[in-house]
Image (cartoon, rainbow, N blue to C red; front, side):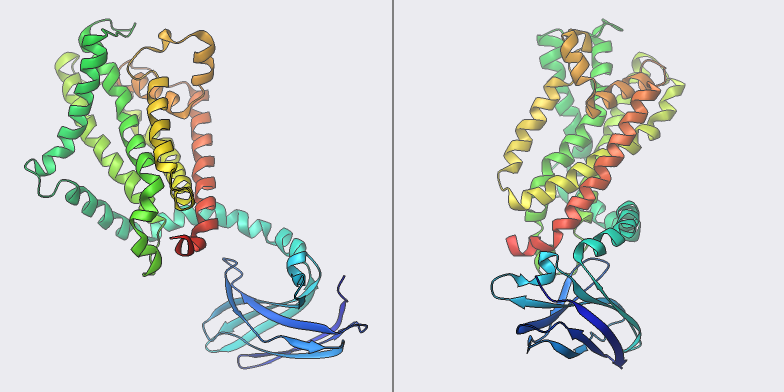
Length: 392
């Protein structure tokens, strides 16, 4: 157990903190200090260690010249336990503010990491709710540029060029239609005709295509952009936003194909189709949250891409996209109907084909779950982003 600090005196001169305190005598102490960024918790620098028998101790601690707030931890240490404050023993915390190349305010107290973390919870909660949205808004021009570059580069040099943006989802849909609609002759109860199957199938593929595209790429996204991580000051969390928005653009072209077919077979879309933007909100939150989570995990688990590829195939066939949900056993329907993708598929079909509102309770649950995944995914990504460069 370390000795207690008492009678703390604090003064400063330009960028030098002068800290004097009494340390309980009784054994030789090795004291040191570390400076942290209080906003991110990032370690900034460490000073020399001081050997002292206890009693009155004085420190001179130089602070960085860059403006901002800094936390200085003054704590004993030894070769066996390391820094005592990391073992949740008391230490001296100095909070200082630097502006215009000099210290403008500072105060010191004796505390522990547990007390400091409890005190910081309200700020962290606000930061967790605000920062993901701020990140997207602050980097909106960069994200727009990345999305344009990805869409144009995806098919550059090919014969079809940008036409593949429409042809790719169309050919994929035609393949599934041939297998399930013609070979297996699957039909939906609400409309047993072949054109009805095509419409119900395409309506379900609209949310699935962008979701599967973005989530499937997420585990390797940081590894594929390792230059941004290691060499540039770059907001790497925007990489996932870029993939999600590129997937939504693919969905927009697939929606044009769907609306064209709907106009030929049934006429104008139902009025409930105007509710589509309400479904895009939870869809965007769900997809981006999962992409942040999987992109961070993919840095440490290199086999994650193969696992996610299999998982997406499994989710596709467990979700009633190519077949009616009536084909599922009652127990399976009760379990699978809680899946966010299942709820999205049902909601798309409701507003685009059945002229009815999605179930309000299900839509609310979908939005809450999607928002929770969005914020948790960003928090997980932010927690480990500082280690990416070391692992890559």
